[in-house]
Image (cartoon, rainbow, N blue to C red):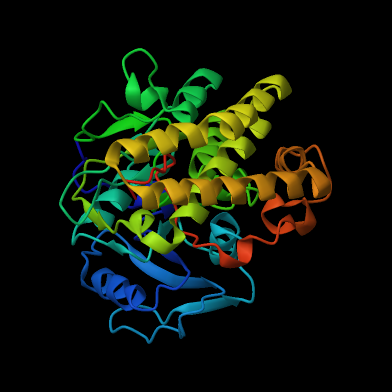
Length: 376
């Protein structure tokens, strides 16, 4: 149950908590003004918006800096000349924050009037001072609550998801997503979606922010896992749901996004599993994931989806080949640096996202961590 309005002093004396808003955009020209308008109309009795940062990842839709919205701070704009991925852009937007909490929003999020007020009240309550990350219910345009929480992937659950077994035999081979839970109660979870994520700034900085090795997808799971390792908690809040557009299903980018979803699974396995298990995941993605996808498309009778899977597979193979040629062990560098065992941060060249040349056309929408062709 959501707490009644707590004392803001749980964060910084008796002051009302400060909140920064970070939006990462890529060809979202028409969505950003709507998102800001909904923020301006939202209940802010439990917090004050200190700053709005909009990071544009090399849009090609004639996007322009958003005009100031009455009642909100004038947005700060960062215009990247190339698309380095969602995680990297989030870190850019959060850089220099002085707020108590940072809210990462997809531009296609319509915030409900009371959602953020309830979330900040929860995080500011003394009883939840170890909560570093909080997520809100996301509903698609049809009003269906999306399954945005999950368990930390294991070798078995990631294999089940990659091979399609978790879809065909969910009871025998469950995946890592909490698909069986209706997302109707406030509870502690392993991870929540980065599509609408509220983080405690001190905890976010302590774990080093998002790892830019994740171009898009799984960056939220990785962040929550590193926070858990430092004693922080992640919670799902049964507040008023926010509406989330079905970005994944938007035709043109589906093959590219599917390739990146596969790639992020390989990155996660390399970072968090033993080398032999990471190799097993990579082999499963390479040999079984496209077959499972094409079987699903075949059952729907969609030749377009079958062609899209083939296109995605080609892109994934090109990325994997480029990674083998240029790979620097970014995953080890990142963790050594942020855990205090290295004196220099990982270099930009260490990021496989930028080594393949494919990031320039990336649509960087954050995921539920379990991207599929029919969701997001």
